[in-house]
Length: 114
Length: 113
Image (cartoon, rainbow over all chains, first blue to last red; front, side):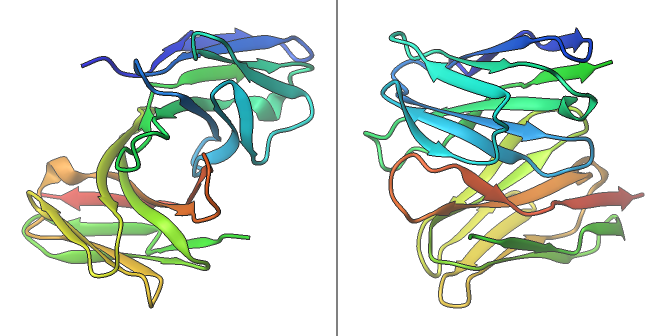
């Protein structure tokens, strides 16, 4: 079965650079969530989108932005990167039309800022 | 603000023993999830608990939910080394819409032979 696809899997950037993370949800899923997990930490919710509109906002820094496109994939744009942005970034997708469905997580993108 | 407290945060146990991980949350929730995470890996969904009194079992793991007490438990029976991982509970706020999950701090479980 198709799963949530994230790219790239690994990314190394320097301080003050920008990064773009991509997420391709499970087919027919209309909702995408982004989470950040620092080393040894629990995942922190950043932002979610439903039908290409922002649905919920968590602890996303102002330096980050995200959007969901017409094909339902989503991109997380990160600017002015800081060392503290080094983390695993997970995307999850779900279907709001199916109240019984849960959110499924991708494999994550490991971002290292040096 | 929804808060999720998990305990213990660290647990070392021997194979064959039983133990329980607890998850308390602060406000009404739509759903409670249990995830397993191996180091550097993604979050593997173990259980989704939707209603008061819900109990689900998979192999040596059993999860339950008491919505009145705002408490969920993950019980491990006759632990084996392969269950060593970090276990997270996560709660979905019942505000409606595509809300993000609030995770507990995780329980780092080590099962020794």
